[in-house]
Image 1: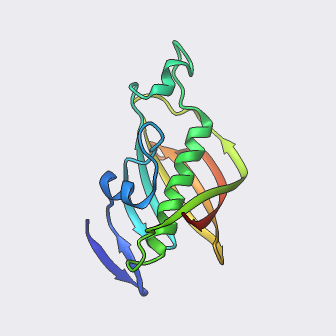
Image 2: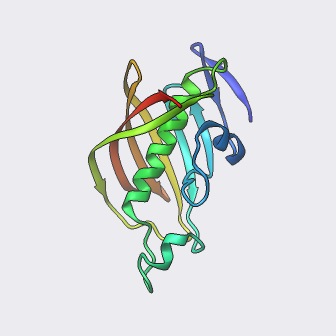
Length: 159
């Protein structure tokens, strides 16, 4: 994991799944971010979800025509946003003892289905941060094509 300073904020060039699990509490089968390829603390991130046929939800969504559920695409956006929030707290806290709760979703649109074998790129950028509430503009893309977009709001709380 490489780290650089940009305008006083840490920029991490890559975050592996082990570090992701230190930052957010999600675990299989609900951990929906495999890697973060760029992270600007408190500002933005690009996460990756490698979608495989082995995902448990494909057994029932839908038999014979597997499609990633839209709510899980939104959850992947929310988790990537949570990683931005935790990184933005700085190295002193690293999010220890803190949780990021998903509060709302606005302007959500699904453009194309996400299928087994797809690599979903999740782009999130902070729109606003006031107190313990953060708002993010999120996009999910597969092979450069927009598959979903939303604005998510989250709140950071003590455990």
